[in-house]
Length: 233
Ligand code: SF4
Image (cartoon, rainbow, N blue to C red; front, side, top):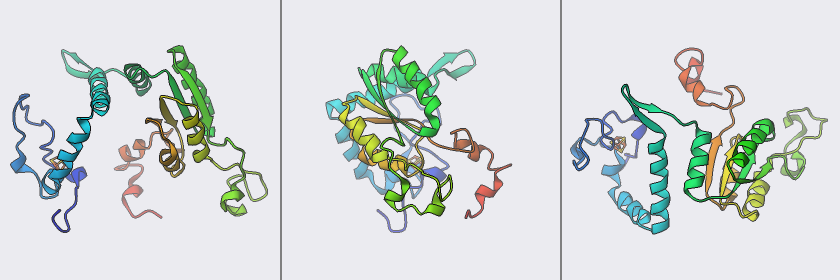
């Protein structure tokens, strides 16, 4: 890799890895237009290495099914492409494609209602759902060194710590085909991902302000949430 250069796709203006000019299926991407920070230019060996992985039959089939699922999320109309599937429906369709029968739901205690609704939908679609909420284990926050003044309910109150490691271990032991994360907090989700040993997908992440849609902050970052663009405390 060239010194001081690292992949920065997020600020790329040419996106030659996509098809922006209406190329036909067998055309060669105009790689001469790649910006200096393009990973295709900096680390071509990685793409070769990744293709070796995709050539493993199980991985190839999983990747194929994911792309077919992506395709099925659109429909052609006289006005052009239209989206048609909410993520929950995608989850049901993809799990069926993979022939999954048993799903593990790792959810936040603050989203217990949503977990119940999701379980109902998944069970109505024929899946067995093993669910474990974050407070499972009933371990006090003091156990991991949280100080009394750092408890949300106040220094005197009992407060159960989130236990993503136990969530992951329980879901692993249940022998589920795939785990689904619903609303775990930042950091707790990181631990869950670290300890989860089965295929994992995310239905939603926690955002206490924006109804678990963190992107709403980006969509309003030019207006009401302009302060997000300055250095945050
Ligand atoms: S891979 Fe290269 S061309 Fe594609 S977005 Fe990243 S920098 Fe741009």
